[in-house]
Every structure is written in C-alpha cells, then in structure tokens.
Length: 452
Ligand SMILES: Cc1cc2nc3c(=O)[nH]c(=O)nc-3n(C[C@H](O)[C@H](O)[C@H](O)COP(=O)(O)OP(=O)(O)OC[C@H]3O[C@@H](n4cnc5c(N)ncnc54)[C@H](O)[C@@H]3O)c2cc1C
Ligand SMILES: NC(=O)c1ccc[n+]([C@@H]2O[C@H](COP(=O)([O-])OP(=O)(O)OC[C@H]3O[C@@H](n4cnc5c(N)ncnc54)[C@H](O)[C@@H]3O)[C@@H](O)[C@H]2O)c1
Image 1 (cartoon, helix red, strand yellow):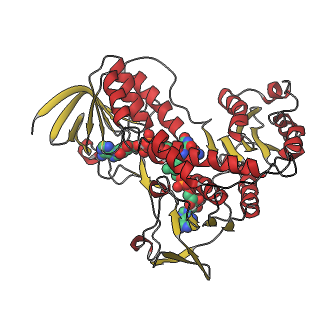
Image 2 (cartoon, helix red, strand yellow):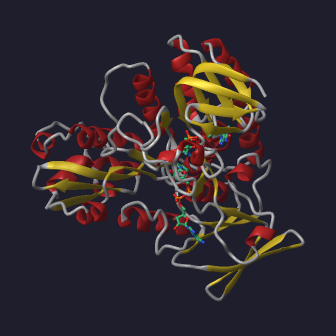
Image 3 (cartoon, protein in one colour):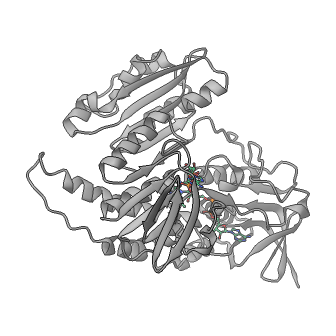
C-alpha cells in the first residue's frame, strides 16, 4: 500500500461534491475526487433530472387533456418509450459518467472510482492506496433509498427510484409506498401515462412535511385523476408471486404489477470510517458549523444530504460553495437555513420555504397566517387552475418566516416569498408593493391581506 498526498480529498461526488472538487481544482489546489458509482450522484442519474423529465412529459399529457372545453378537442396517446429514451439518451447518457469525469479532470482534479473510507484525520483510503489531504477531506456521500421493516418486503423485487427511473415501460399497475416528494411525483407521472396507481401513506395525508392544506388539496387532485389514495395506512405484509405484488394493509389486499418504495432515505455514513476521526459512526447525520466543518473533527467538511439540512440539490450546492470558500480561506456569509426552498413537481406544483405554521408555533413564535385560494384569483379563474398560497408570519418581528404556494408553476411563484423570508422583508413593505395583474403571484397580496 503506497501513501500519496494532495491538498483536498472529496469523498462522494453528488452535486455538491462534484462542484466543490471542480471549484477547488480550478482554484489551483491539488484535488482527489472519489466516487464509488457515478460522478454527479443521485440527482442527474436517478433523481431530480430524470424524474423531472417524467413529470414534464406527464404535464404535457395533462395539458393536452385540458384542450377539451377550452380550445376544442384533442386525443392523446401516451407512450412511455419517449420518456425512457429521453432519460437514457439525454439525461444520463445510458448511466455513463464519462462526460462528468472529463469535466472534472479538465478542471484539474484527479478522479478515482472506488469506495473511499476515512482511516484517520485527513487520511482517506481508496482502491488500495492511502491519501493524505494537507488541507482536509470533504464528505459528500449522500443517501440510499430506505425501505421500511415490513414483513416480506425484503424478499420481493420491489422498485426504488433507481428502478423506476430506467423503466422502459409504464407498468399496467403500481402501488406506491410512501407519498413524500418521490412518491407523489412518480405516482402522478405514471398515472398520467395510464398506470393504475394506488398510493399508500402512513401519515394521515400525503406530502406530510408540507402544510396540511397542501397535502389535502393534492390528495383531492390525485383522487380526481384516478389515483387510489390510502392515507393513515400501515402496511402489514408484502408478497410477490408470478409477477404480482400483494400488499396487505388495513384489512385490504392490494395487488399490482409493480411496487415502488418511496419511504425516505438513509445516509451513507455508517461505513466511511467516522470512528477513525473520533466521531460516532452510528449517527444519522453529521453535525456541521456555519462553514460546513464537521463538529468534533479537524480538517473535515460535510455537505449535502448527510448534513440533515434538507435533502435537496440546491442545499448540497449551497453548502459546497461555503466549504470551498472556507478551504480557500475566503470570507463570506455562514450557512443559514431559515429560508430553504423546496418544490415538489407535481401538478399543481407545491413550493414552500422556511417554516410551516406548525413549525413556527412549535418554535414559540407569535404566529399569524394568511391563506388565499388561487382559483379565486383572476389568473387562477382564467386558467381554471387550482391551488393556494399560505404565508406564515412572526407578528413580533413583522416578517414572514414561511410560505407555501400550490399552483401552476408554484415553485416559480415561490421565488418572491423565498426572497421575503430570506431577507426578512417587513410585511408592511410586501403589502406596499405593486403586483402585476393578472398573475398567479398577485395572489400573494391576498394572502398577505388575510394575515391575522
Ligand atoms: C427521485 C428523486 C428525485 C429528486 N428530485 C429532486 C429535485 O427535484 N430537486 C432537488 O433539489 N433534489 C431532488 N432530489 C434530491 C437530490 O437528488 C439530492 O438531494 C442530491 O442528489 C444531493 O445529494 P448529495 O449531494 O448529498 O449526494 P448524492 O447525490 O446522494 O451523491 C452521493 C455520492 O456519493 C457516493 N458515495 C457514497 N459513499 C461513498 C464512498 N464511501 N466512497 C465513494 N463514494 C461514495 C455515491 O456513489 C454518490 O454518487 C431527488 C432525489 C430523488 C431520489
Ligand atoms: N422535488 C424535490 O425537491 C424532490 C423530489 C424527490 C425527492 N426529494 C428529496 O428526496 C428525499 C427523499 O424523498 P422521499 O419521498 O423518499 O422521502 P420523504 O421523507 O419525503 O417521504 C417519505 C414518505 O413515506 C412515508 N412512509 C414512511 N414509512 C412508510 C410506510 N411504512 N408505509 C407508508 N408510508 C411510509 C412517510 O410518512 C413520508 O410521507 C426527500 O427528503 C426530498 O428532500 C426532493
């Protein structure tokens, strides 16, 4: 075993790790960048990008089906092979990371494919070699799909996002277990391509992390689109026989050709050698300070899903920029998470930022909320759109601490509310703005008027 030295080792090349390795190498540092799978991580190959290609295609179908009654008639024949082809050719290059590797090498980094492990402070072992990192190690090892401990489930060929994304056909029927962001986006996309979908959620509504109004509305939308929605439902047993899954839940026996498990993720930190740098390998997420340094270890930064600050690509990239600045000795604002935006790309989209009403109340704030029905706005009525805007204010400080937009392009409408929460714009200032007529975002003014 030989020993080699670089300035920085980046372990795991999700969106944040890839970006950090590239920025550090371009700044002239000697960087070793390691991934055991594909450079770029979950987002481009099995996550954000291919799933949004599914969503985009299914939205086009839904829009075509809206021609009737608004613009004449249209007949639509869904064909999943167009989606599968786009994902294979355009999104993932057939799950090949050659271009990403070359991009990183061109930036000046050394790229190694292999399982990396910490073997001591500033020391990483990969592919039989030990590397010493003069400045330190950046961890960005991300997450894997997590399956619940349901009787029989592990013995079945259930799908996770990693199987659904490369699917060449839309199955005739599918049960989706867990309706967070992954379950909701995929359930609606497949259903719009003709798959008979049943969703089973443990919590008493879908999109449980969002405002109750958002989950309730999306449950109604799903039901209207023909998706069977079972909430507050505990799955007792799963079996698979002759191409059919059987899910036993709350006295019912559900059957389908496919079972998609979308019940959350687990972090990849148990086996990366945390104990060799004095950290507990059993922890679920790594505690980091405002500069992304891991608490309790020298020369160690963590970014992305493993920090537990929001499992989103934009959080991973945001943290990467902060870690890079710190490693390069540059000044800049520390990490702050009071205005993390998140968008579930269902139709209507569910965009939110900051605290929900419950989180704000639990935090002991003097809470005011304002809600408005988007379909009652001029643009909503014209578009025959449904949705809502809800704002959550801290009355003591006179600022918004959270907001939710459900509606067409809800994630885009959210942007002004994300600015308001991030910059703590006084509610009085937001109320004195001019909102263009007739836009969806004009409904923000109504939600602000309703604050009380
Ligand atoms: C279906 C789906 C849809 C999503 N849609 C969105 C979306 O629309 N918007 C959004 O913001 N987020 C979305 N996400 C979440 C997003 O994909 C992640 O938050 C994002 O990938 C950031 O993750 P990360 O940077 O922590 O690392 P990851 O992307 O998880 O990558 C971690 C990398 O580390 C590597 N690795 C792990 N252990 C080791 C080791 N020991 N040695 C070497 N390499 C290792 C892995 O191979 C992997 O490549 C989605 C996720 C899924 C599953
Ligand atoms: N648009 C986006 O930004 C986007 C899209 C997809 C995923 N993601 C990220 O990926 C992460 C993982 O997504 P996810 O949807 O897998 O997780 P999630 O944590 O968002 O949702 C999991 C859901 O499964 C439910 N559940 C758990 N155990 C269950 C059981 N035994 N039976 C039925 N339901 C059960 C939970 O109550 C929860 O509603 C998210 O945290 C999100 O940040 C983001």
